[in-house]
Length: 229
Length: 381
Image (cartoon, rainbow over all chains, first blue to last red; front, top):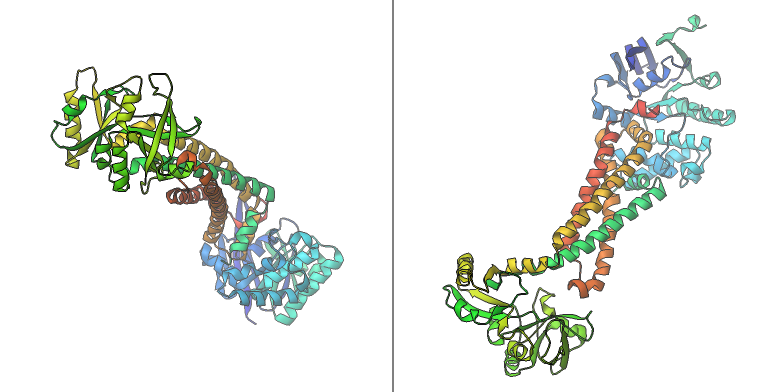
């Protein structure tokens, strides 16, 4: 099966004051198309950094990052932005919706970067809201929605441009168990029925159990299941 | 167009703050519209001044009279093909607040020097034949409801009769127009002979002479020649072209342009700091939102354009409302500035200033939003 994500010998370090902190030390990761992968690990292990590199939000210091068939580590800023708009949908722990916009306007945001007409954008938004079951909340502002509903709107926004890859950073971290399960079922459905490749970072083992595969990151390296403490 | 809801929502993120900022820009541009409009109205007189007319007045002050005997000597200067004279009357109608720009003039020669004044020939003849006759501007006639045949009393703030009274009665014999200059259409002209015979003091003097040049390019030479005639005499003269003379006259009230520019400058400088600071604060608070837009695929340039568009929308809308209010108020100021509507050049200048203001106050926040690093902003750093 073709790979949706391939990280090879990726090194990433940050400068913290005068000190250089290495977050990833030659990490390798391959995610086949259509997989639902959960990345787990303790705080500061580098799992969010892996997610940022896959999503083209950050750059590796060395190594190669190939996502959706493209070496994104060689793209410039504008090229990377355009690539993100075409290939990746993002879902964050705190939803990150635009507070001044209604649910449907939030969902429409990624489509503003396309050449779709107003009517076509509306049609796409209608479908995305239908998929997450919030068609009746389309005119509500984020502050008028519950946490679970806001996360569903965020998922609709991530889906609306029909990306091949969904990047989820602790998508249930701010939700109660029942709502979290509903969101995870929705992600699982998107993966199984629509074939979306999903890479999810989570602390929560129950959340990770919804994924088709789990990997653990510690001290900047992937850890084999048998080496886990 | 599709980005307007996004720009609009960013603008109204903090409703109260935006309303206050908006109101301060509206007030600033209202002030700008009114002051600059007044300034432009004053400037109309200067702009429409002609270079083929010279004004000869006392070197000391334009309120200092010149002897009527100067007339014959000035006529000897080469390059002159017309001369007349006039005085400042300082009249008002019924109440001092009804000030009237009134001038006793040498009617036979005066109007030939002013082809801009549109007056039917029979009305001019009537003035020449009627000792107490007066020609009134159309705006002035409209203001007081005067018509030909009316007998109109004016009081003078300066000129009294030998019996100490200052009431002067005139018969309106004509109504003139001065196209393109409403101020001039509010003037009141009457015979100098009537004035000279009736006044208690200053007989045989004039306020200033008006000289018409045969060749407009010879103004400086003719002016020097006239002033040389009276050098070292008790009544030295200062000769200027009409533009210089009008400017000098306006300066009697203060340098309007300087005053207006100073006030507007101070207002906009303050506005720049206040609005700029508010804009910076607004953008700083929304950096995570801009990071999200970048995450979704908006380029650095697109984010920069969104912030600038927000700034432009705020400044331009507020400026247009401010200028609109000024335009609505302008007709009520007509009695003061003499112009019925806010000059178009003021509206254009205001629009340009609003764009400049928007770019200055939006520029730094826009660059900040453009340069933000997504992962840092999402982490709240």
